[in-house]
Length: 157
Image 1 (cartoon, helix red, strand yellow):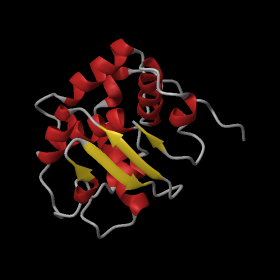
Image 2 (cartoon, rainbow, N blue to C red):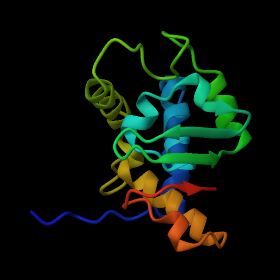
Image 3 (cartoon, one colour):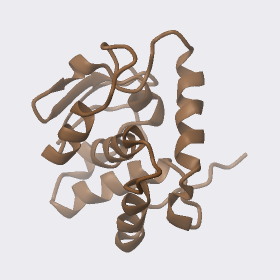
Image 4 (cartoon, rainbow, N blue to C red):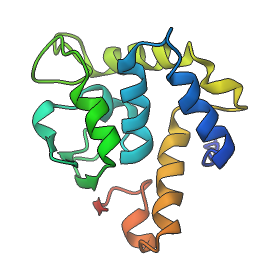
C-alpha cells in the first residue's frame, strides 16, 4: 500500500482549528494538546505521553518513542502556559495517567480531538500538525536537514 502524503494546514484553516479548540465546551487539555502538537512537531504518541520533566522553561526535550531520536524544540510561551495549566491525573505526565498502553492513550486523544472535528477541515487529521510545524521551520530558514520529520534524525529548533 502506497503511503498517502499529508499536507500542512492552510494558515486560515489552522487559525479556525485553534478557535474550535477554544470553545467553552472543549476541555482545556484538548487545546493544550493541539497547541503542543502544532508547535512541537511531535507525533501524537509522544504528546500523549509527554512527561512533565520534558519541559524546561519554553523548551521540550525528549527522545521520540517511535525512533528513539533526541528532540529539543523551543515552544511559544503561550503553549508552555497551556501545558502548565493542564490538570494532571498523574503528576509525571501532562496527558497520561501512566497505567494504559501508549497506543491506547494515543487513541484516546485521537478520539477526543476528532470530536471538535478540526474545524471541518478536509482531511483535518492530526498528522497535519507535524507538516504545519515543518513548514513553519522552513519559513524561518531552518535547513531541510534539520526539518526532515519523516526520517529518523534529530531536529532542533
